[in-house]
Structure formats: C-alpha cells, structure tokens
Image (cartoon, rainbow, N blue to C red; front, side, top):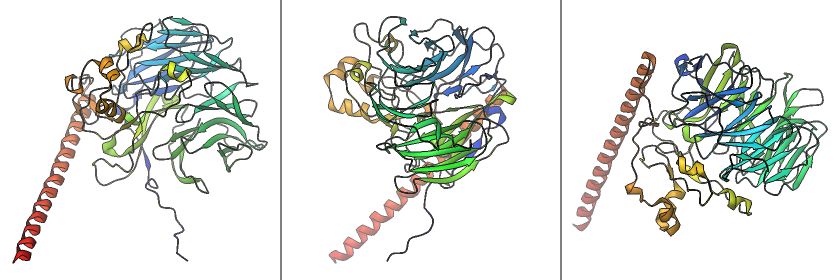
Length: 524
C-alpha cells in the first residue's frame, strides 16, 4: 500500500493580496449609495467605469485605467438615463462599448471615444426598450458578438441582438418567462449555451440560453441562494446565500443533478451579500462580502471534497462593490493572477487589489498562465441565433510579441456599424491562436475581410505590459515617478533575461565541446 501525504499540494497555496499604494488608487470618486446588490463597477484593460451618486437621473464615470490619483469633481460622465443606473458591463469583445441599465426601465449601449470622455455623453449608440419595470441586471454573451441579456423587476429575462441598424430596439429576440419573482443573478457556462439564474423565490434554474427552455430547477429548503455562478467547464454550479437561520452559506452543485448540493458550508452570521468570482484558468474561487473588509479564496477540484480553502485577504476598509480586470489586462511580470477594483464608499476611493502568486523568478510563468479566453468573438449574433455554439477564442498572455490588434469583422449590409468604427481591442502583446490559424489556412474569407496581410499592418510597441501609443504623458510628478520606476523595472527585468540567455548559451557551447571531445576519443 503506497503512502499518501495528508496535505494537498497546490501552486496557489500561498497566493496573497496586495493593495495598491495611494497614488495608484482613484480618489474622490462619488460612489453610488444605491442599495442594489450589484458590483457597481466594471473594468477592462483601457477603462474603469463606476456608477456615481447624482441628482436628477442616473450617471456613471468612465476613467482611463492608468490615470490614477485624485479624480476631477467635474469629470465628464455618461448621463443619458432618466433614473438611477443599477448595473453596467463592458462588452467583452470591444473595449469601447459599455451597456447600462436603469430604473427608467431601459437598457442603453454607449460608444466611448478612444481618448475617453471630454464632455458629458447623453446620446447612446443603442437603446433597448422592452421591460415594463426597472432593469436590475445585464450580461453579455461570452462567445457571441453583440448578444445582450437583461432582466428586470417584471420577472422577465430578455435576449437582445444589437446587430441591427435601428438606434432604438423595442422587440427582443426572445423573452424567458420562467421566473416568479425578481432575478438576483445570471451566469453563463464557457460557450454560453447554458444560463443559470438565482431568484428571489429561492429557486435556482438552469436554462438553455438560446431557446429559453427550462432544463432544471431546484428549491432547496436549507439554502436560500442569492448569487449563482457556473464554474467554467467543470459541470458545477456554485451558489452563495443564507441558511434557514440566516447564516451566510455557500453551496456547490452538480450541474447534471441539482436535487441536492455536493457541498454546503456555513461561513458566518453577517448580513452582507456574498459575491462569488471564479477564475477558470487557475480554478480559484474568490468570495467577497458586501460590507466586509476580507476576501476568502478557495481552489476548486473535480474530486471530493471539491472546495479547498486557501486563505483570506484582510483589510479594515469595507467594500461596497468590486470590479474585476479581464485576464488580458493583468501584469504577468509580477505573477498577478487576478485583480479586483475595490469600491470603498467611506473614503470615496477605488483601490486596485492584486492577487499574486509568489515566485522568485520574474520571467513568464507558463504554469500559472495557460491559454485563456480572448477578446475576439467566436460567433456572430446571427450564427448564434441560428443554433451554433462555440467555445471562446483562446489567447496567450505571454508578453513580448508585437502582434497588431486583430481586425474585427465588418458588418455586412446593414450589419454592425460598431465594427466599422473600432477594431476588436486586445491585450498588448497577446498572441491569438485562432488569428494565426486563420492565416495559416489562407482562407479566402479572411483575406477578403481584412484586405491586408499581417506584415502590412502597423506594429504596436509594447513596454511593461502597456501600449505606448495609447499612454498619455504624465500630468503630475507622482505619475512621472511611477512611469520612471516602471521603466527602470522593465530595464532590470530585460537585463536579467539577457543574463539568463548568456548563461544558457555558454552551457550549450560547453556541451557541444564535450560532445566533440567524446567523439574524437571514440574514433581513436
């Protein structure tokens, strides 16, 4: 009988949270005082958007991610809603498109200029009118372009196709009417074929996202779910909620059988809603409590006991909401595997919080950065509506390659006017495998759509994970110092890589010399 250790080995056992310095935070942000149980913040590698407190209608701020420090109180806002804004989400395939929903029962989609807002934006790119009551949640489809889901206090989930010429859309593609109360959260699986919802009627539902057919539903007596999350391709659902004694509780479910949970655990007796965030690349699960200062994180496995507690990040500052940076916006040179943007209402502060795997080497760590979902859609809206499902287009986070941002497919006929105004925005230096495969195959469609080869496209210089053509000059002394320190760090890292390569070259030369000597001795 073989001996087995009592501990579980994991490369993420020592992950720690690192809060940014004050000069790297966003200070003086009038964060909303809404009691809605949403995140109130959304982030992409270019912009941060946060819902703000304002009088007369609803508004939210758009801030460039690298322009930290004190925020101008007269900063231009997106202010086209007649009621309070309840939720905002960036388009996963275009860093300049953001959707918002409001108490005025509309969903609006906005096009942000590449240089940011210079004046208040009041005219949306698209306005979606279909709900009869205030709209509380919106979600973009994870693989199909320009497909948006919304749910409101009329208990309906509506599917919208934005690939149409009309600025005002009044008829959704489909309406899902299985819910008997307000929908509290929505979550897609990896290819977007399944939609999980949690509802105020204490029921968890698993729905076929395209047709709206109800596949499973469960109303478990000892667990009242408030948030639900599909854990990637692991065929599991994770829910947070409360027990019958109002203790905060987490539960893990088998996607194919929701009759009883695989794991159910009480956490504490606090009252704030628990928000789950899952990283499918590292299989790490982060649980953030509204009003808490700490963040619990776990590792998920496919075998019992399924959920493995790692540790807590603790802070005295309570969070009202959280934004999450997509993987393509992380700093891989510091082994950053996740980044939160923490809304601290009591200080009007947005604090970046990096989750870091401690490694001595600063070179690229391939074992903690597998291929991840990129920012290129796998399907058009028409393809998805016709019945096709595809997984996400994968990309590498390895820095150093100077590959131009992939060209977004143009709308045909009355197609996507948005595609004509922006290219699909990718992480600088990220190499997309599907893009390479298309050009290796030499398909005629790819040649006709782009009209250019990869060599004809302009190259984008990249330094320290930032696109130099999009970095504005520093405006303050602190920004200048930060840029200087980043440049020095990049120089030091490159020197270390050069030294490592020199050592490797000498080793190879010595091996060749030894091999030649052994061959000459053998011939004698």
